[in-house]
Length: 291
Image 1 (tube, one colour):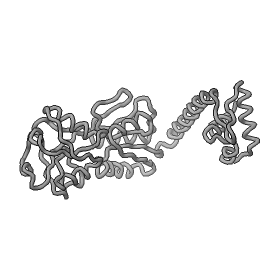
Image 2: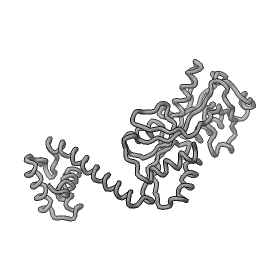
Image 3: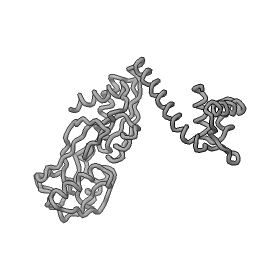
Image 4: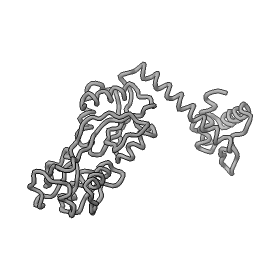
């Protein structure tokens, strides 16, 4: 059994068409058919069955494909490890982060890091907390800047800084001039908050529950600037951090004296997943810069 046979088999399984696979591989259709037949002969069982103009995996082929995919992934990972060792100043980092960190913090970190390591490339993803952690668990990203309510068994977590959450109200609101308030003082106000997968929504629900209140939610958004805009339009009040760009809005930020409303921002990575030198360098840089 040769390596190219496995790659040929995987492509035919994906395309379900020998001619199309041969075209992509830049080989003749008879040569590809012979390669598949030889593989089946060496294995001692058929892998495909014909359905009209297409061929599809039979039950043996479905099982075998899982092992082939795993083998190819392991070989590719091994190549990447060796490549990284030979070229430590190059590489790619896949980084996911909260929407609220995208306006200032992440661009600042990337700018400073790239000034030291200009040949390291980045793939960036923004999402809700729940989806960020799903991406991390699935191995789709190397590092994640987020604020999980609880840590998971599969992840390593390094807290970086604490962020205060403020009650924000529009100018002219009865509480707009207050130096601080208790959360229960907005019990009767309509609440603008985030969708349920978002960490700030989970925290908002938690803090209201802590003071035995059920928020009267009128609007749900995805971005802090959107939530702030809805507050500015006098459609409700919200519980959010003070992020870059909100100084220009006609809203007041009021500290909460009770309960203490904060969230912890940190960097997470998967315990068992290989971190390339590039990803390791960026992780260390972030921790040194923000801890």
